[in-house]
Amino acid sequence: SPGGTGVNSLSEAKFQEVLEAYTNLTDWGLDVLSLRRIFGGARGSELVFVVLAAVHKLKLGSVLVCFEGGDTLWSMYAKLGNYVWTIADTYLDNPYHNVAHAADVTQTCLAILCGGGLATVLSPEQQFAFLLAACIH
Image (cartoon, rainbow, N blue to C red; front, side):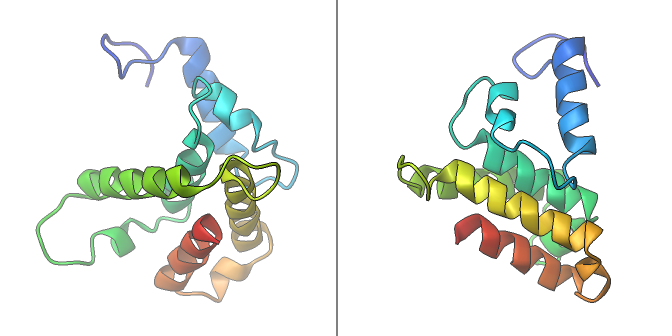
């Protein structure tokens, strides 16, 4: 929720933007390119948001914590976020096959999973693999 102090706090307006983006993430008409603006223009933020929000929307947290080691769900989200930031950094800044394209493809795959019914026939592990493949394609 919004409020608080420090670098992790959000204004009410920014919180509402993030919440709207999360709510609309499975829509076919979502402007994925606008996500970077929400996160202050940080290159790759759109991809990180799409992946983490997709994992949350699809309730794939069990896939993240299925490995030994005693990590909490939140620490696994942090590790996944760091991994996706690393992926985002490897995309070249060219006109088409760039990090924004990866975010767009990943969001489209999420829409297919949710709106197209694919999630009903894939296991959670397969859903996660589908999203990660889109992310790194």
